[in-house]
Amino acid sequence: MNEGKLLFVAYLSPPPAKVGNGEFADNPNYIDEKNYRTMIDCGFDRAIGLFENQVPHYIAGMRAAEKVGMDYLVRDQFQDGSIEGIIDDLQRSGKSCERLLREKERAICDRFDEYAKYPAFSGILASDEPPASKFAAIRTVQDWFCGRYPGKEFIVNLLPTYANAEQLSGDEGKENFDYEKDYVNAFIDIVDPQILSYDHYALIYDKKNDENVMRADYLRNLEIFAECSRRTGKPFYNFMLTIGHLFYRTVRAYEDIAWQVYTSLAYGCTGMQTFTYWTLLSNGEAENITSALVLRDGGKTQAWYSMRQVISEVRAFEKEFLKYRWCGAMVAGGPDANFGQLQHALSAHPAIAELKADAPCVVGIFEREGTYALLIANFTDPIEKRNVRVSAKMNADGTTVYYRGKRQKSALTISLELESGAGAFVLLEYLSDKENDL
Image (cartoon, rainbow, N blue to C red; front, side):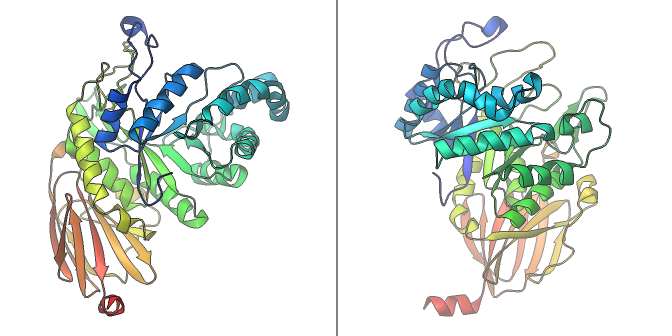
């Protein structure tokens, strides 16, 4: 429904009344046009419900989304005979997935036939972080769903590289499990999904040592999905950290948001999903929840304004970006622990004669009919608030650079100072292209 645009998704849309926990159990209803307008004003295209645990709640969400021009993904997990329930029950009940579908089909169809009446209904987030043992069941449910609701998305969100072997496999006591081969590629082979999706939250606060750290496998996770996307032609989305919880940092400033968006774009990601948009309506001691893009009452945080700024910057070049196909990535300005885990980083590329950086950066390379574009992202930890100076000489006749929402022509040698978290999209220009345009 968003052809020609990069997709920005607000996961955990405005909640209905009385769905919180503990002190937040009596929350009022927030599903209304005003709160949905706030999402679209930020730049989001799509909402995904989480707290909408009744059919009227989902319908209210779809109606509000339609009014403001968003689409809406259902998370069917609470109802008897839910989509997620059937996938999960396959292991617990011993019944076949086909039998479970026959038993629960009427209840499911009663709900989804109703959802399908609304233009904003775009599909379902069908399973979140499933182990490989559920892939066969997911394929059966997916085939049934897509056959009955053609044109609607059936999205499964996969685990990240740092999940353990037991989580990835679904087998208790499992000690070794190959993430790329036995998890991601097996998912593609068994399920044949429309879209690839995963979450990886790299920005951590280490309370024990009182320091901020960054997961060293963040870029490797992006690399795996970028390469699978290139090989299969399936787009990939990821989930970004946008709420402070557990041991993850509170995302507050421009650099916290921009770092996640631009590094994802450097690997060709076309869908950025938030975890979460609305602040969770609970806060047990172990949860350690701070804030998301909006507060529990819908009030905007600084992160909301930062997200709006980043989305606005990306909208300035997205049409050009989407014309190109990701073909690899280079790194510069290291060393960096993330760089050491990459398995297929390019050491050189014909489009780039020379590349220098005074601190870590990632350079995604994109191709279109023999022409090239680059997405250069500052990879220093956003907590450092460190700018990166990048110098690059292109094998081209000129460049167009998009940076912080502005477009400017440049020579074949570009010199950029990327602010903390920021990225630049660079179109390489060739005289033959200009002559063909005449």
